[in-house]
Amino acid sequence: MYQQHPSQTLPTQLSPNQVTYVSHIDPYVVEALCRLKGRCVLLETTRGAIEGKIVDVKPDHVLLQLHSRQACVRIAEIVWTMPL
Image (cartoon, rainbow, N blue to C red):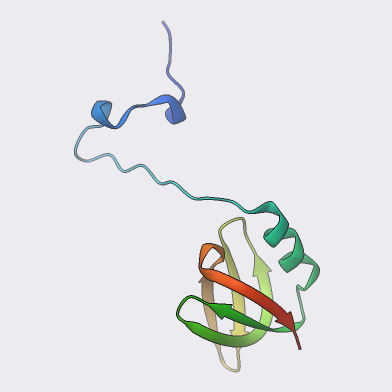
């Protein structure tokens, strides 16, 4: 029996309770953020600037430590970064 790869599934073949997630990965931004892991940075996002220490980097988001809290920022929303 032929099994179809999930990325080959057409939207018309999905049942109403199935959800398909699509995320654009920018490997150069991910690589640059990985090099800054553990450092304080200023991230300019589409919603404004956020400053914190990079705790972790994933293909679609970066985890920042903001004093006593953490923030998860989608990489797709980052306009530019600056190490502090």
